[in-house]
Length: 354
Image (cartoon, rainbow, N blue to C red; front, side, top):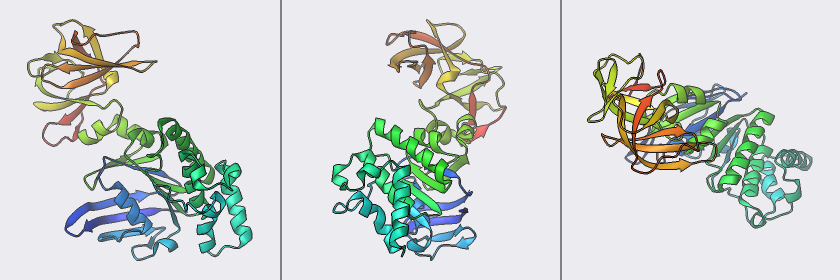
């Protein structure tokens, strides 16, 4: 069992406030991902959980036990760092054994745990190699294996894939997901990559400027973002936000026509949120819809994304068939798939319902 409770957590470095009152509950065996832009406080929060930095205010409980003053070595928590942090003079076996020996385990227990971790992570052929003889993906698996040998209650992973190329990131991401299924432990994973968050997490914690913007499943965050920050951070390509005013049953853009989107919240000014699947492009300037001009097209093999600029200057994206080509500067008219738009307050960015 590993349940975590963060209550009013604040972190201050001298006169700089980094975290501004974090309240969060993490259930047993959950895979939770902290995601947000650089500097939002996600890695700082992870270090507070690990005990590497002291909490300025608030309380942290693990299985109902207050952990604020408990040293890192006694928390039952293992952390995998972005930099791997392997000992260069030790081979893979010794790197994995080092922490286990400090726990006071017998030689037989250490050997058994290393054998189990090496099997799960496919490290058996590498146990006698030094870190310099390994690829980036292999080093990361060793770092994960070293944590696994300790059999912690909680795994913390701080941007473990950021030093890997795209192919290796995909491979190791699958290994981490499989590892969580196999061991069933509680995992907390920090990343700025929302694709990693969407593919790995049971629950995503979206952070911004030291605060939590929203907590929910990947589907909840994608389909019902709480505000404009979450809406534009989750999803690729990002959601487009257009400043609009109500014009009867339609929404008007400055100097660029109006569009029908279905039921609309009762507010004179709104931010209209459109994901690429909600946008339809029509060639030429039509009388119904928003006027736009094509900027460029991203061809991705099985589909393409066309980026066009509205009359008010907003850049909007639309998913199209790969053989549906548009030329730069081509005039188009934008319509919206009924019922697929999102609406947000023009004043504070919060989500509005119809």
